Image 1: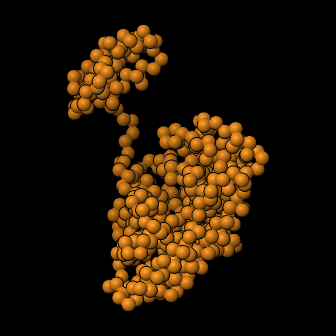
Image 2 (image 1 turned 60 degrees about the horizontal axis):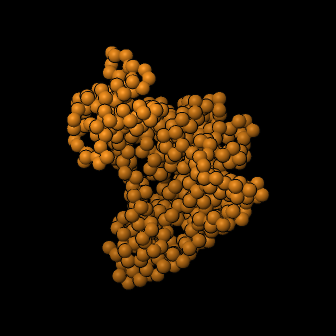
Length: 484
């Protein structure tokens, strides 16, 4: 709100200078705003002796019972001088997360959760080797290293082909890491291309910074069952208009489950190389392919201007530890971006909780076992959903996708959003309407619309077969009096 010393004047050093700054600021804001100045004194006076502090308190008319907050007249305060101003816009409401905040813990049955069945903490601890077990037993609830526990960073790096080339890795909450990366790489005015629809922050943060965002939307078959991303379409988008500074992709894709082939991934990489484009690859669902032959190589392993996002939430069944990571393709090429992400993290979480780091380390050291567990749960869920959608193909147009833990069937003969409301209210089953993915349509200045007639189904939870049975009985009862 104010600088330490008015423009054109030299601030006095030492505690007298601090006192002068405080009381001059108080004088500028005058009577009605004096309480605000007093409220900042403890933070600005750090390092002063107790006697000096007593003098300052007495001269500032400190009150033990503060008065109600007055209205502030900021026109009396010293102006702030900015060296750089960007066209920053407010972040819009995160529609999908607001939807889950409202319904996730009150609707009896969930059929749209994107994570796999959460594993019990006791099971994770039981999987721990002796080194991790000792870390757990001796753990103190202290601050941790900002980038992540060294053993955890080493374990994460071992997931990548380039782990022996000083791969840069930083841990954090996955949502936080998306935000920090976008803030580090974009300043406003750049052109971004992104798979869409998708997790809102993948486009929303860039839009809020004043960037232009163009959508790479899926194609669909005539009957609406099959959905895929066409790389020819991406090439057309990237080669038209301004240069693409950043390409954002998410495969396996949330919500459709679509997945590129390896040759298509190579074409995407070639497009980025030809345009000098940085690639942000959301790989949160990598590992949940129907066939391991379809698993793509991490983008950071095949392109030195790529950053891969992954975490414990989806494929390992550990969303509660809130641990994810960014892996940077080359410390030589993107080292400055990596350092900016680490620096900006000082303004968010600073560091991860110690218990979460040790649990994540235990999980990653048993990753094959955890991944096998989640894939088995998904297989049972897919089997139940295939039977449901086949029996009610007049309602659902859907083919099992090649990857991920979610599907995005088209709802036929009725409004998709109203359908989810009826299922929630009458059946007690929560589906996610496709409209929750589309708030970016207006923000991007164009009506994209793909997904408004669809709902997200998910098959990563252990109770999916039972929930599908509940939904199936309700749909069966509707056949006698179909909804129009």
